[in-house]
Length: 354
Ligand code: COI
Image 1 (tube, rainbow, N blue to C red):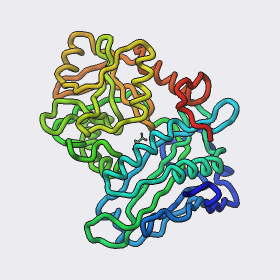
Image 2: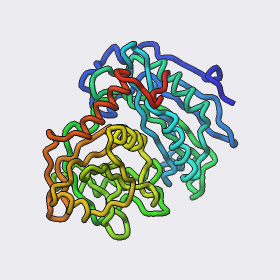
Image 3: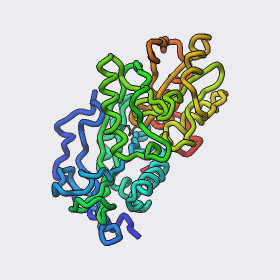
Image 4: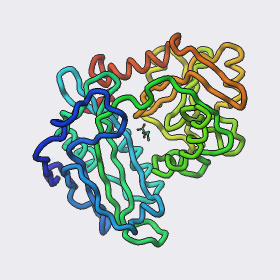
């Protein structure tokens, strides 16, 4: 078993924070002073290294670059009013990380490495946690196959790493979304329910096509009929229809079990709304809009938190929303931030103190 004392920790001599400010930082562009790196070889995890953030030296034959055995997670750390560092629901992300690892035929990462490593790393880089509204320290654990060998087979060697990025909001303004009917994100039996790198790479072409038409993201539909909505860009998606919140269910294995999705379901129910996780047909959405019953649409995700959708285009039919009058999405967003920043009670024990 790996314990924190087994970690090999090398600190930077001088923090890069001396040269930069945490004001108005874009998503994912800056990285903290340290990173975690550990190799899996000969069937076991080796010594965990926490060391200055630096480039990796990799052979061009490294398997992940060729066949995409690569998975990742996204989490966020915050500071409460006492200045303590807290991570939002990290055990849920660990659990999902290992679901991804299993599906991609990769080794599981033990809790001791993931959680103790995370704690040690955040302790070192605690000063990088921004305290501004809508800002956080984004945590990016990832793993890739590191065999230097281009035969197509699961690797014998893997590298697990964690890097940290102080970050501002992912989507700044309410979004315009295009309902995608040609390209697909995921198919039943595929890998849509896990966080493998290829899911995101494969989405880029369709997203770029939608952007050419002035849209921020696509609303993915199912692979067979292009009728049942799936995810929105890199987020799960919610529709407030009448007095019910509807979000696509996870049963077909094409949708990521978002931690923010699950949090949103809990908070919506707390607000007295019924939440239905079920297949949702695009015709139901259009009909609800025409009947004046489609009140809100929003995406949920770790990076994006809650992102309101102000326009949804299906074929030539465009649905417009006045997000200024919305109730649920802004309330949930505020409530989630207040829990994360320790401003209201964390009754569900979502916050993990470092
Ligand atoms: C997240 O919300 O953490 C994601 O993984 C989405 C994106 C930044 C890839």
